[in-house]
Amino acid sequence: MNTEKQIEFDKIKEKWKSLAVTDKAREKIDSAACCLSESELRKQMRDTTNSRKLMEALGTPPLQTVEEVKGILSSAQKGECLTPYQLEKLETALAAVKRLKDYLKRGKVYENPLAYYEENLEELQEVREEISRQIKGGQIDDYASRELTQLRRQMAACEEQMKQKAEQMIRTHRDCMADQYYTLRNGRVCLPVKKECRLKIPGSVIDKSATGNTLFMEPAAVAKQWEELELLKIQEENEVYRILYTLSAMAADSASVMEENVKRMEALDFIFSKGKLSMDLKAVEPSINTERRMRLKAASHPLMDREKNVPLQFEIGGQVQGIVITGPNTGGKTVAIKTVMLIAFMAQCGLHVTCEEADVCMNSSYLCDIGDGQNLAENLSTFSAHIKNVLDILKGINQDSFVIMDELGSGTDPTEGMGIAVAILNELKKSKALFLVTTHYTEVKEYADKTFGIVNAKMTFDKETLSPTYQMVIGEAGESCAFYIADRLGMPEEMLKAAVKAAYGEEAVNAYTFHKAKKVIEKRKGDRILKMKESSGKNLCEKFQLGDSVMIFPDKKIGIVCEKVNEKGVLRVQMPDKKIWINHKRVKLHVAASQLYPADYDFSIIFESAKDRKIRHDMKRKYTEEVIFSQE
Image (cartoon, rainbow, N blue to C red):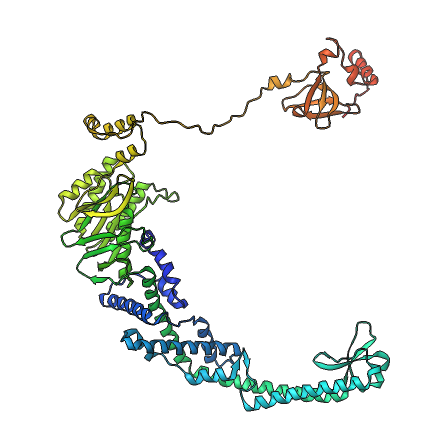
C-alpha cells in the first residue's frame, strides 16, 4: 500500500525537487517522510516559514550545485595536482559561498533566524583571491608569478627572433625558395627550399613535399634559437607546476573548511526549497497539535487549479472521530478525502499547506484505500483488493492513525457489501483513529447517524447544471441523485420506472416526478460486421468445362481449359506453346465449349499429339513399352 502515491504526494515531491539546486537536497526530498517528533516538526516548520520570509524580503538565494567540488577537494586531500579547470571550479564555489554569506548578512536586518547560518560559512578569501589572480580562462595567467612573466616574455622574444631570421633568409636566398614564406614543421621554423639548392642553405632538412621537389629546411641560425626556446619551455612548465602544486596545497589545507561550507549550502538548499514550494503553491503555515483535532479553512488540492477549485471547509476531532461522506458520483468525494490527507501529510513533513488557515494534528501513520486495486498478476478482483487493503490497514491502525477509505464495501453484492462496510466502521471506531470514508449505502448513512463519534457529511451537487460544487456539508447525509441524473440526461420514462420500482417498490414509482417525455431510446445507425461469403467447392469445380475458351489475366491471352478447377481453386489451361496451372481468379470465360464443339467431341485431339494418341490406343489393346510424357 503506497500511501504517498495514492494521495499524490509523489507528485508534490517532484515539484519540490525541481526547486532544489544541489543533488544532496534532492536526495533528502526523495526520502522525506512524516516527522514523528513534535519538537523536530516545529523546527522544520519554522525553517520553511523563515526561508519564505527571507526570500520575500531579499529574493532567491544565490545557491549553486556543489557536487563537482566534493571530488576536487578529495583529490586535493590525496596530494594530487589540481588542474586549472578544477581550481577555477573551486574558486567559483568559494565565490558562491561569499555571495551566500553576503545574502544571509543582509537578512540579519530582518532578525530572521536563518540569516545566522552566515556565521557557519567560511569565506576563505585568501584561497579564492590567489586562485582568481593566478588562473584565468582555464589556464595559468602570464602574471601568476614574476618568474613566469619573465619566462613567457623571453619565449615570445625568442619566437619573434626565429621568425625574423627566417624571413631574412628568404629575402637573401629568394632564388632558392619554392615559396616566399616560412612554415612550421614538427614545431620547427622551416624554409621551403628547392631541391637543387639544398647545399646553398646551411641547415637541416626537417621534411619534404609530396613530390620531393621542395625541402623544408631549418636554417642553422634558427636551430640555435629553437634550442633556446625549448629550454625556456621546460623552465616555464616547471614554474606552472610549482604554481599549481602551491594552489593545490592551499586547497588541501582548506578542504575540511570547504567541506563544511558545502554541507551548510546543501542544508540551506533543502530549507529554501521548502520556502520556494510554499511561494509557488501560495501556501500558509499550519498550526500543529497533538490533541487529535484537525480544522481546515478554505482548503484546496495543491495540484488543482486554485481558481477553479472550490475551497473545502473541514473539521474533525473532539467528539467527532469519523466522517461518512455521501453524494453523487463525480461529486468530489474522493477529491475531498485525498485533499484532507494530503494537506495533513504535507504539514507533518514540515511543509506549508494550501489553505487560508489550518490546524493539523500529528498522526503516527497515514493509511488509505483508494481506487479499485484490481491486479491481474495477483489474480485480485476489485473487491478482493479492497478487502486485502482494509485488512492491512486494520493491522497497522492505532489511536494516533489517520485513515481514509473510498467507496466502502463496494465491488460486491450490495447487501453483503453494506454489512462489510458497517463491520469496518465498527473496527475503525474501536481503534479510536480519525477516519474519513465515502459510501453510497443508505444503511451506512443510517449507521453513522445513530453511532456516537461518527457523523454524516455530503458533497453538494448543482441539479441544474448536473455538475458537482465540491463543497462539503458536515452533519447532513447526501443523496446519490442517480435517478435524477439519469432522468435529466435522457433515460426513457419506462426504464426509470423499472429502476425506481426495483429499488423502492411500486409506491415510489407513483410518487416520482419524471421530467422527460421520452418513451424509448432512439437508436442510431452503427457499423456492421461484414461476413465473408463461403464458396462451395462443388460450384467452383463446375466453373469451367473442358474445352472452354478462356482469357488469362493480366496478359489477356487466350487458352483452352484442359483440366477443370480442383479443390485448391487451380485449373490447367492449354496455351499455344505449353500447358500452365493457374488460379481460377485470373481466368475469365471467353467462349463456352458447348458453342465450339459437339457434345461427344474427343478433346485428346486438341490436348495430345498424334504420337501420344497412338501410344494410348496401343496401351488399351496390348502390352507396350512406350511411355507418354506430359507437356508442362
